[in-house]
Image 1 (cartoon, rainbow, N blue to C red):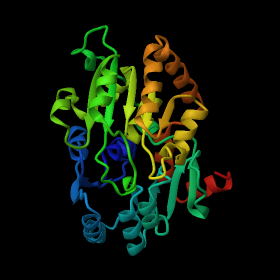
Image 2: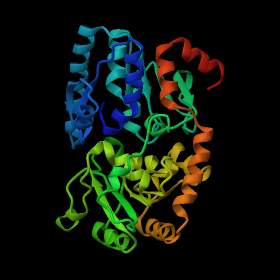
Image 3: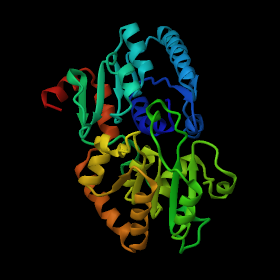
Length: 349
């Protein structure tokens, strides 16, 4: 578990596997609220890594994490190793001669993909993933976020609204730290204060941030327990920000969603992502822009439309009717591996 989203992604699958009598051991990296979520959900885990912000630190951490995971794996002798875009399980699986199953939905995580794909046994991606990864590649008709936001698992908690006035429009803004390897060379929101002041004219703004905020923005910081964020996203009138995972989560929950991020060439990074393109072009649930000005224009358009939320909920219903229960698929794939792999390949998936 290297990221808070990984905890959400795997939590129901782990419960399914344990209920079926399998033993699941969790190792984790101390990043953001990852460990806090593991504690909230009652998972036992071992911390074998912490988060580094510099490339030199990341290189050192890679070697140390592989070493620690290898030591643990040799002691435990697992039947397989599983992770999200995880070079550590791919390398250690190869070293101990056991299969590694890696899930990913991020085409532009170039460094992580180069370190992971050649060593992984299987790479599982959404059907809309833009690249063909060859004979190891298995696709499923869903998104990572549906592993925990599918109605079979997610039930919104209305209690998250207790501190709000009934007439408040809820606007959630996400700032990221720009320190992940796949964030190198990318850009987001330039003038945070002006950005928030504009949005504040249309509703109550809450900021969720990976890093420190300017003093004048601290009053907007969202102060709820991290496991409740998806309920607030569900009831929100708009999500807008730099966080790609949260942008996809909001869209899948039926909340208007806008992602702001660009490459060094000024291209919106959503254009590089199969799931973002599908959520925009097929379902109309998500928009993405390379700069905050165009994003704010779309945000204002959405917020001034009194029917936006209902429209997005209808779009969500269509999406759910066309996508699978990803957790159920994952559980079955892992329990019946390698037969499940060959079945998927024979079906051309």
